[in-house]
Picture 1 (tube, rainbow, N blue to C red):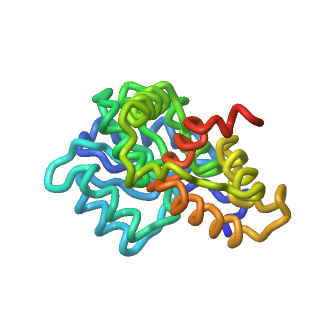
Picture 2: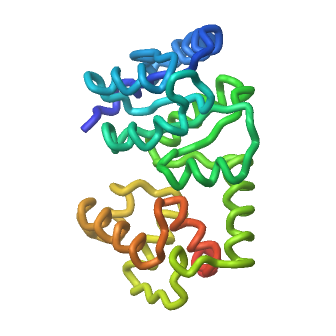
Amino acid sequence: MKQESEPIQVIIADDHVLYRAGVKTALSAKKDIKVIAEADNGMHLLNLLRTITPDVILLDIQMPIMDGVAALPEIKKLCPQTKIIMLTMMDDHSMITKLMELGANSYLSKTSDSEIIYEAIKTCFEHEYYFNSLTNNALLSNLKQRNAAPPQHLMPQEVHLNEKETTILRLMCEEKSTREIADLVELSPRTVEAIRDKLKVKTGAKSTAGLIMYAVKNKIIEEM
C-alpha cells in the first residue's frame, strides 16, 4: 500500500525525445509526481516493466517497433494495477473506445498542457479513470451505435441486478475508488471487486468503461 507522502511513480513512453523531456520537466515541478523512467517504444517499455512497476504510464499510441495499441494489453498482463493514459494526436472515437475497453484509464491529446496531464495522472491514480471531452464523446458515440444495433453477445437483453449490485454500479459511475465503495456499502474491497467482476459477466461489459456505458443506457445513473 502506497503511503500518502510517497509520490506517484510515472513512466513516459513516447518516441519523441523533446516531448518526453517537456513532460518530464513540467511534472518535476510537482512534489507528488516522480518520473522514474522513460521508454521510446512499446518493447522498451515492456522490458522496463519486468524490473519496475509504476503507478501510472503515459503511453503514446504511435511508436516504432511496438506501438501503444499493441503494448497496452501486454502492460495489463505484467502490471494489472498500473493506470495507463494514452497519448495521441488523433481524435478517433472508435480507437478511443477500443483502447478504453482494452484497459486504458484515460485518453489525452498530446497538445494537452502540463496541468491537464498532471490532473489526469492524479485522477487515474486515485479514482481509476479520468474522463474528458475526448473520452466522453467517444463513449457516447459508441453507445449510440450500440443502441441502434446492440450486439446480442455484448449486451444481454435480460439483465437483473440486485440492490447491492445496482448500488455498487452507481458508485462506480460516481468515480468512487474500490476502497471508498467498500466503506460505503460495508463490504471488503475484495468483495467489491468480486461483485464488479460479476457485473461485467452479467452485462457483457469487457471493462469498467463498458459498465458505465451499460449504466447510462439503462438509466441507472439517472435514478440516483
